[in-house]
Image 1 (tube, rainbow, N blue to C red):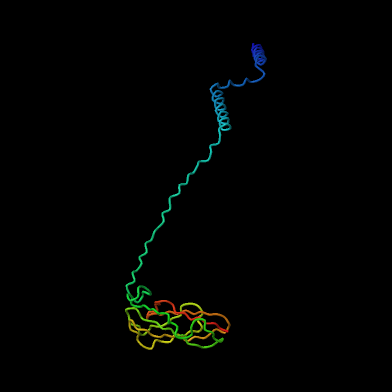
Image 2: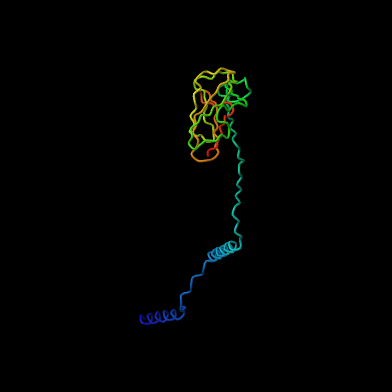
Length: 206
């Protein structure tokens, strides 16, 4: 009896082995997972396509607006000269310092006088004080322009009143080189301010 049961059991196991499939079937895939993956793939492809065909936006245009430059105007106040001694020329008789001369201005060494090279000489002019102020200490001739000729003005030596005519001189030395030379001198007040017309000496060295 036990033997028959064992034989039947073995036969049943054999039949079961013969009916079993050779390979284990793969599990059925989840349909929802497949749909999700497919949707992600499509979205990715659309994104790449849009990036490939979208034109690159142009760089932004920067507009620079220049502000108008406003010129600064600085007003300069010019001091009014009220000291009459600082006024050089004007209408004769109305200024503190003024000088005039006539056709006999050249007392010595007339224009175009001939001198030797390095010759010492004294040029003297005759002038008139036609201003309102007296010429005193500090008044005299100063060099203006031209050939100085080592000029040294001679002091007035006395007070010159308004309306008075005087002679005024400069010690000069003729240049060493031959030629024509002109030297200009001018009266100045005690502050060194020149006034009146220039006085000239013109010589020929030969």
